[in-house]
Image 1 (cartoon, one colour):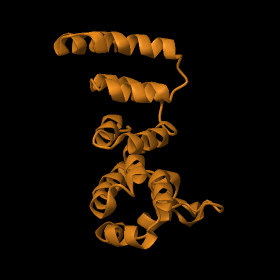
Image 2 (image 1 turned 60 degrees about the vertical axis):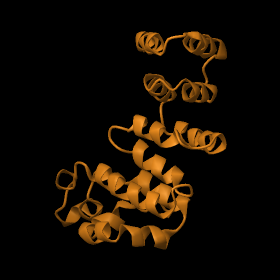
Image 3 (image 1 turned 90 degrees about the vertical axis):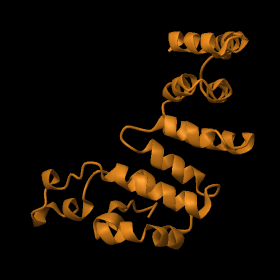
Image 4 (image 1 turned 30 degrees about the vertical axis):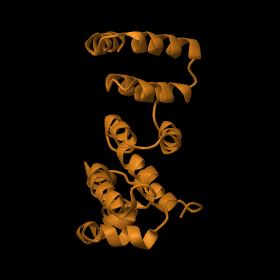
Length: 186
């Protein structure tokens, strides 16, 4: 599947209702977080069963399925949480990032309860497909300074930039004033 680049939408598009009904069985059968990541990131808003062979009457205009990617992501995430949240964390992050639009606040809320090591690994994974500035601004907008610092440390930004700004925010005594200053920065 990785070498030949098969359109993984076909797994869902062949029989969407049956697939969604047996999503836990699908996850158990695949049983590899990397392959599930590939599936989650490859899902598109397109009915591949109609667009694969455009000579049979199904053209690209007939194959659009608005919201298919979001529906798949929203259905897959609770199944992964139920089965093994720690093991499938990268896949859960992928389901949030690959939505349209990406749910960066949801991703960061998912990272909040993790320990430092798991959070660092998840952030490294998250920042690969995401815009670092968007993730950093979202972490600031959530008023989570340690998370914003962790994001900034993994970015290409000059440490003098973000350390000064975050240091000033951290030194602010009042939480309300810190939130106000954060909002002004954003």
